Image 1 (cartoon, helix red, strand yellow):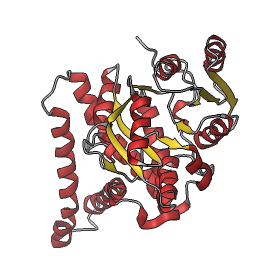
Image 2 (image 1 turned 180 degrees about the vertical axis):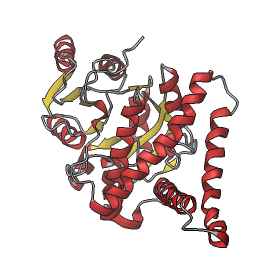
Image 3 (image 1 turned 120 degrees about the vertical axis):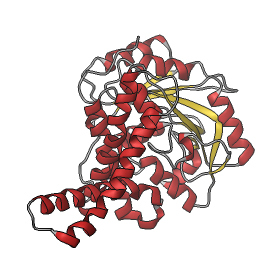
Image 4 (image 1 turned 30 degrees about the horizontal axis):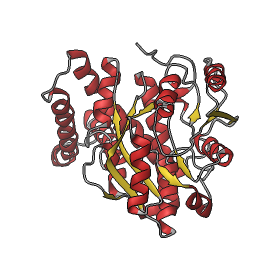
Length: 340
């Protein structure tokens, strides 16, 4: 478990791991980044209370670096990746191990069920779980078991990780997709089991969400630079939206200043049609039936375009100049929403 500034979430995440029942010994290795909110002290207290918890340092704070440090420090033949911002469902580990044996897969993952505690976080969670929001990956709501492109978090065979060379530490986001690509290229199976469920708590503020998605988009753009068409077509929808918005803004300025007039202005106005359709989609998603209050619906109208536009802007930057040193800074600081 990589950990950075997760004081409000860490104890719940750790408890969900330690309560898993499996046939055999277990350990939990925490890779501690340089937290500023008291997370490290909390982790040290938890480790002192339970000898199954072990601590390793991750001074770089990067997720793949911390994952590799934790994996190398671990002792058992199966590696279960967990997240400090999530909670494993009861029976998760046992079911995953059974699925590994039953399918012969190298990596098994399940469904990421996002949840929220505030109207904003619930709006984000709903869009995480919707094909309109993050869509495409089976782990965002798939129901059919079978071979998969990638796996959320992942329950992995250690010998396969050693064979393919662990996580690529030069990748800051999307490291799981890239690892699963190498696993599949090595001839192994990646498997999706919808009976596996992990509760994920999204970012707690609009600014944190935008920073997270911009960084994630930048690294997906970097992965497109490295691996080209192996990336699914769904990754190109948000940057297409950003390009349309840019063209529409330019055409609007030319029309207002009189540079575009007459028939040319009418033809150019066709650029607005897909954007109008997108705006109607945002409204429709926000007003869709369900037990949601007014604040959550209003946040949905703001969150959906934020996710798409921030991701798309990051993606275009990543494609054209590379992700470089882009990091997800949304966990920096100590203003995570406390648990109730």
